[in-house]
View 1: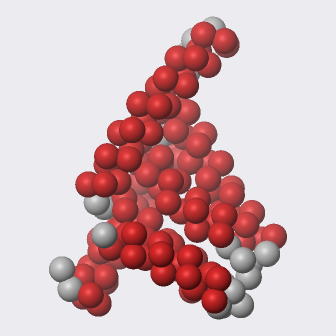
View 2 (view 1 turned 90 degrees about the vertical axis):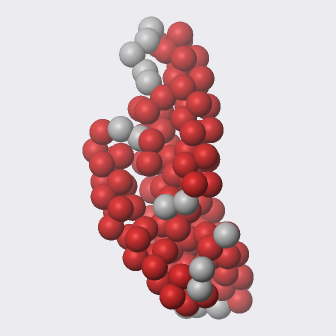
Length: 141
């Protein structure tokens, strides 16, 4: 619930106060950390991993095998990170693609392997406790 509220607030702030680009991005980042710390994030990650394993099976059939679902999620997380950075670099006053990417990218990175999964996992673990504690202090719960 906290994550949904933060994403909604980020979306509204992006529409109303686009010149303060850091505010919606900060809210979206906090929302993604709260989502990653929740059971809903685990559920979404399980669904994404199942879909990635099906995609890896199809790609493995085309390219001759050796592709795992964890690898597909790693590529998805890398693309999501690039979308966040590119959206901020192109026009930092309107960050709707970055905010949308903040919803799925950290969840995909939870199940990704390799360097991408380790990097996102470290960031998630460091920030999710802080984000959840901050929001609990602000709104209770």
